[in-house]
Figure 1 (cartoon, rainbow, N blue to C red):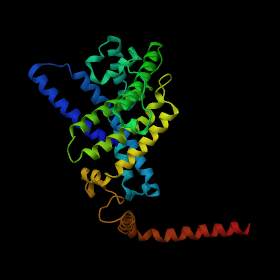
Figure 2 (figure 1 turned 180 degrees about the vertical axis):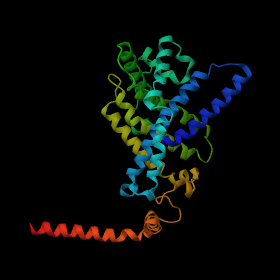
Figure 3 (figure 1 turned 120 degrees about the vertical axis):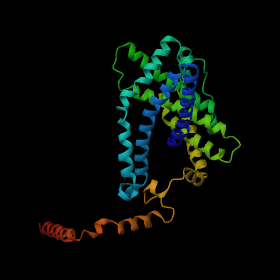
Figure 4 (figure 1 turned 90 degrees about the horizontal axis):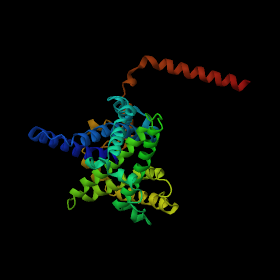
Length: 319
């Protein structure tokens, strides 16, 4: 689900940058530059991190077959994990987002950067009121999702501010803050895309995707919301059940969503995703076509090795 958010919100960021470029050429107005810079820097950290983790999660979900070269996950992981450091280590470039947060908080200029709206929580902690989620259905309300994400950010920003004032090293902890900032930016951006599709045939699948994405990031986000604003035990339980329900709803749209991506067999490069045969048939076909089948010179070595192991087992049995 984060992958879909990256694609859709990324397209919006690209469009916004193109429009900004035209604006600069025509008027010389650079006022939007900083917000776009924050979005693109955050995208580098956010996308590479969750993509690498996502590929590994998919590999693990496939059990033993995920380790097979025929699954395609090995090559996919080898390509994606490198992207974490293409632009310099994520923990280095992620420092740019907290620096901007500090700059605008201290200068009271956060209103000029839309993605920093949550800083108002720090200036006026009671402004957002209390979380009203009391049932599973309440977690599908965007105002409750936003409350948790913004309250979590307020907590992390306050901790970063305090650590900075005390002169502590924040070069490592900034990564968590940047990821939380991007959770909020991509959450908001994803729902902006969904709202534009109301009335279309793909609104249902897209809304289901957005809810799974939203509730998935809330599973960890609420843990950074502390007393007196922390969630009650009942709210935590209903959040988990809401997430389960969102996944069940998404499953009903899985076929149309997969088809919408339109990946070819060449792009998938996996025996686990063949449209013309099931995974076991594809794995068997891959094994039969393996070039290892023609390495007849190593067969005697394999046989000899088995004989050696058999003799060792026989010797152990005599002891």
